[in-house]
Length: 206
Image (cartoon, rainbow, N blue to C red; front, side, top):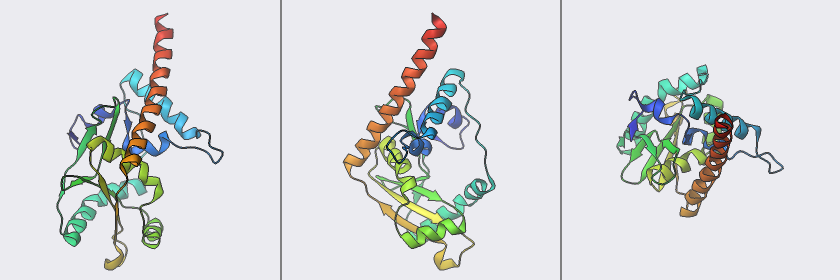
């Protein structure tokens, strides 16, 4: 396990399928075809694997807001729930090569934490819907699959809201079949990536 602040955290993820992009790896259009974002991800990971250089990603003000407020969200969560969140690092899947994920924290012996600090509008949708946002389910499944944990806590934090509405928390307990399906999807994506890698490298060798 490699902690996020460690110098080796970014290099360790180069060329790998990670939890943060798992949703892109399985994205499909309404007619059931692979989405363009999946193809883009394949070429991004192929480039990383060939060059050894991590792809640059633009950090928007909204994304920076999330990074800046994550620690406060974690502290409020611990205080309000009476729990301790342990640091989590990058975990490689024990059997699936090139597959890894980084949760925002570990809870007890079998839980992972995923924190989001979104816009107020998005935070309000989470408060209204009272369930795990579907767009983050693949990420949390990947985190559980790679760390071999069985449940996740999803938290949304917005300090701009009144105190009683600043934190939304919900627990996600997938079935073993859901985690296994995530692992199968990772294998499918990585098999396609490996085929692309071999095609390029074998052409160069010919």
